[in-house]
Image 1 (cartoon, rainbow, N blue to C red):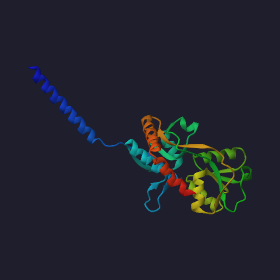
Image 2 (tube, rainbow, N blue to C red):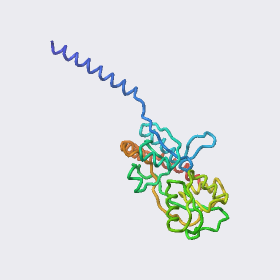
Image 3 (cartoon, rainbow, N blue to C red):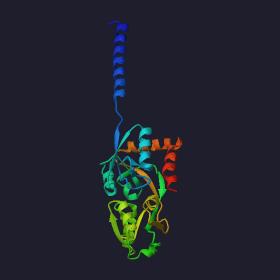
Image 4 (cartoon, helix red, strand yellow):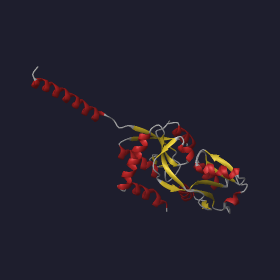
Length: 254
């Protein structure tokens, strides 16, 4: 066989593989990650009353991260305690629900770079004279099961300060406080501010009881997702989109 003929055959074969490869790339679909969220944590996660869509700072941020990183997201509405258990066993790819980074959670879950800092505060009825921690001696203090607020309320109970009452949904705790069926509720300060504004009949008292970093949680066996999220976060900080979303949801709270 002549060399020229051999080279012609090789070129034809290479062209076929090249065309097939391009077709495969064009036909490839973006991966979709399941994102667990509990949409009762304004302004991070909440339900739009008109569209019934899950919106909020962190929810919208995850959508922007997906767009920047080249993946789609499917939000799954789930209670917070089930969400924490689910992400630790990789039932979900991602969990975005105002999750505090803790040493205990880091044992079973990966986290993105921190998004924001916040802390726990006490919310009481606007006619209450309770303010400092010691004022809650013998009183009932609520928190949403599985949250750092609930953990703190349980610690107060262990110290003999107050009695803990757990809630599956934090909005029910705030309603009970407003209706006089609960003495106070411990929660993230940003969320407390939102409920005080929207529900009325409530006020925040006492100091900021903790300083916490909020981040996106990721299935521990999928570090590549964490890498994509952190790279996208960096881009969103650089192009100003992160600050734009922050101003949209937090500046409007003031």
